[in-house]
Image (cartoon, rainbow, N blue to C red; front, top):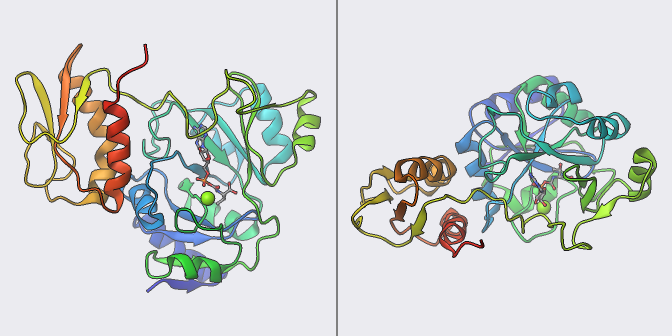
Length: 315
Ligand code: TXA
Ligand code: MG
């Protein structure tokens, strides 16, 4: 059962307790309802992908109560700071370099060295983020491929029974997702959204590039920089060949394993750490073999990521 919470102090405390326990809580923002989970917890973030039935590990937006809080996790250039000062809190997401070492789960950033951060203005989102003092990863609170929710009832329609709770903050005032701007290498609109481009350009004092209009600029989701191991990767292995690091799953034991019990949420949570560790163990010009992972539920997203790790490299 999904708990329906009110924006009262007691219910916000309840939501905070659930989030600190790694559970998922949907909450209102001025754009759309977000499906929140602890962005520092691999398991909580894996649960977000599982609940949405997302077939890919796209990077997620990290929500924080203020620019000051965001500076613990990312590096803000003067230009990023100017946009944050002009539009936060509000319907703007900024993609900025990750501050290393990072406490964020690598599943949130899909292994990238940048992070998307948003400071929402909705008073319930603000109350929740301030009270829980952990960054919340939050994609829109709908099953993958369905319309974004702008009321608590929409969240329950799509995800009822799959998440711990939803806080009812009434209808969202903006109703479309935040505008996403990356600052690297230069200010570029990655996703048009709730904040008009004209307002962004006025604050910057110059026109904004738009992703996809120049071959040099990659649209989100097509980012080539997703962490790829330097070792070669072989899939559907049941045993290791000579010199290979074998990553097991379920009954297939390896040098490492994604999940000895064959749990897909645990495997998703371990995926990016394990890729990195296997790469280190394999060494220069080494090779990694992965045991088969069932192509159901989160297994689809895991296999999508593994196929891309195994694909021929562009030089
Ligand atoms: O209004 C919104 O933005 C809502 C509410 C809940 O805040 N959230 C939302 O989140 O739409 P989500 O996770 O669905 O949006 C993620 C988008 C994707 O298009 C993803 O490619 C992009 O943000 N993104 C995230 N991290 C990125 C990164 N490091 N570089 C480029 N794009 C990134
Ligand atoms: Mg969405």
